[in-house]
Image (cartoon, rainbow, N blue to C red):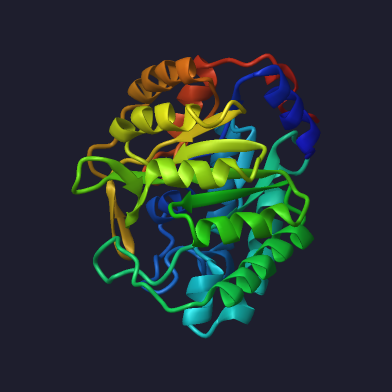
Length: 312
């Protein structure tokens, strides 16, 4: 595993394939989801299922797999009184992903989110009162754990505001690991794109704040296919660097994902080809998107580095 190959692909504008939804594939494969921590504890209780998810995406052609660390948000685990558990769970999660990627050229990303408690039976976060200093310290602890565990890069997922997202991304950048920032957006009541669940944060303001941090890659992720193209247009007005996309389909009713209106793999391929016009070179999927979609992307969007993707 080496990020150097990914960095070279980014420099050349070569196609990169990401994995699909880790948490939703764990659910699909039978791992129980928690109302408190969603898929986080599966790393400890169902490691074989976690391995199966990672192997499924590697076999489908992913160049990067993401360890199951999204739901171990330090904001959530502090609220639950389990912040020390976050360290152990993340260490196991990264070890499982690295074990699956061993002997290949596949890189392992660590996921960081700003997830808070989720309303039972819904998808909205319960806001918790955490001051900036405490939040920054929590994010730094999470980032340092992922670095120490051996991640090749950090994926900032569902960044959706101009406060928590900035603090989390700055903590990630402080590790000196490559950082990919993923923005999640939805259409607000005013008809404009906003941060997911943050009607006080316009998408353009989020884009300005996060692109100013100069990460390795900017991404539109966990966003519906219908909103992704408009979001890409906003991103491109402020960002000339590499771009990735990985949309979602379906919806969340905590603790389970509802697999409805699932995008056929061929449609995701057609849509991803259209997004190439915005300069997108890295493609994958988020919640509701599975290995069959990643295999379709890998097969239909060949890259120059495919012949060396797996090293034996």
